[in-house]
Each structure stands twice: as structure tokens, then as C-alpha cells.
Image 1 (cartoon, rainbow, N blue to C red):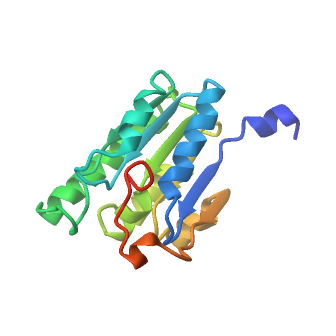
Image 2: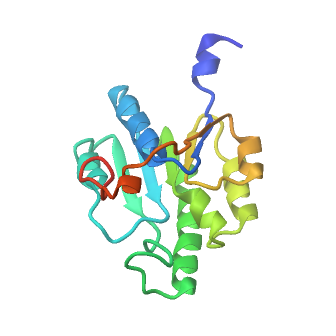
Image 3: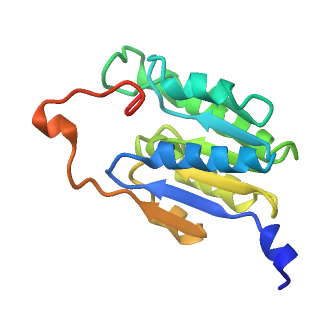
Length: 182
């Protein structure tokens, strides 16, 4: 394999685990890729109604990075008062939309943020997610984040990083910090 062929191989990258930093790692990849003028699409499957700092940060990379929330927010926690079926319908429509985005030819990298959680919560069938992942275009890099990655997704991934919590400020009573946690 020549070096140019190696550079054009689209990878499946998974950031998982109970520690913080999965979405942050994917966003770091966005910054690096934008530096090379790559086009990136981020689809967020499970995020709350809060205004996250990354929403404004991504605006600064406009022209290279585009982010959309395809889910209905947190499921069963914090400020969620929606029926489970509402979350399920949104996530399934989000996966269908992700399939379109992945095959559109418009992007070099597609990030499916919190897809692992959507699968683990039963919002999206694992088989449907596997079909999308396995049938991605050869040159497209696909990044999947969220705790509880299924063994089947780990098996087909090219790179898997597990974030492991060793220590967390919440254990000392320190609440989430603006620009660090959200």
C-alpha cells in the first residue's frame, strides 16, 4: 500500500468509556481536520437542552465544521420530560439522516456524537447502526462517541479509545464548569 492510499483510507474511530473526554476528543479532531481544510459534520444524538460551549465554538469553524442535534436531549435524566417514544423516533430519524450525510460525498469526517448511548438506551437498534457503519464510503472517516460501546462496534472499528474515570471533581462536590464540562 502506498502512502497516498494509506492517507485516503477512511477509519472508523470509537471514543467510549465512563470517563470524560469522548466528545472533546472528537471535537479536537475537528480542529485538526479544519486546519487541513477538511469538511466535518457532527450529528449529536443525545444532548440536553442546555447551551453547550461547543455550539458557539463550532460556529468559529464555520465553513469546515457543521453540527446538528438530531436527538431530543437527555433521556430520563436532568430536564427530560418527554415520552421515551419521542426520543426513539428522533434518534431513528437521526440515524436515517446520518446515513444520507455519510453517503452525500460532502464530508471528509462524520461524527456521530453519543451514538453509543442511543444504542445502549434502546433508541436505535444495534443492527441498524452496524449497517450504517459497515456501509460507509471507503474514504470517509466515521467517529462514534459515547459510553457503553457495544462489542460489535468495537470489533469493526479501526481505532477504539476508552476514557476511564480515575478521579472526578464532582466527587469533591465541585459542579460542572463552564468551558470545561459544557
